[in-house]
Image (tube, rainbow, N blue to C red; front, side, top):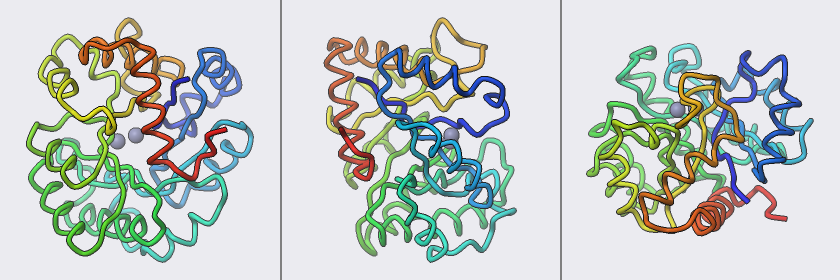
Length: 259
Ligand SMILES: [Zn+2]
Ligand SMILES: [Zn+2]
């Protein structure tokens, strides 16, 4: 079994053939899918999707791109929304200096509110960090000192220093199709170096289609292409990577039933 720990099934890209996409994931042995929230105010449509499919769960959070639009959402509101049985994580929240769609101040406020909610609930936080290694590392250390929380750095494209800091703080690191791109040798070298109990795979679909699907719409069944490259980079079999990453997923996303 493999798991797609991060995709966006509520995006319009999937509106016309969602049933077929989930069925293809089932057929490909993708045992669980977590559809990640990007706007707290749109949680209802995400919940409708996760209630429709047995193996699809969701998170609740504000993507840094929407940090201004959802500025002021409190940890308390987030905590209330996690009471729903299909909501299994916080996020995605964090920092994005690449697109600069949300102001840095609102991004940091949102990031810290999500961390507070993760700390209070014990649920994992899905962290989006892009071109923001120093600020992300600073906030993680600062917040961890206030009390521990669980989290994953998703779609990792940052440097070795932030990755190792995250590992030392107890966090996990997840890889997308970017790992399969020719130019990503440094990322594959880093992926080979991380502890086996802290790595996960995801698609971030509809974006970032891996390997042979590059340029097309991505979907959860393609997560196997990410797992293949991760296995190769680490010098282990696909079976071994599937076992490790799936076990890591269930340990971190502990609200998702394993059976
Ligand atoms: Zn992201
Ligand atoms: Zn995402």
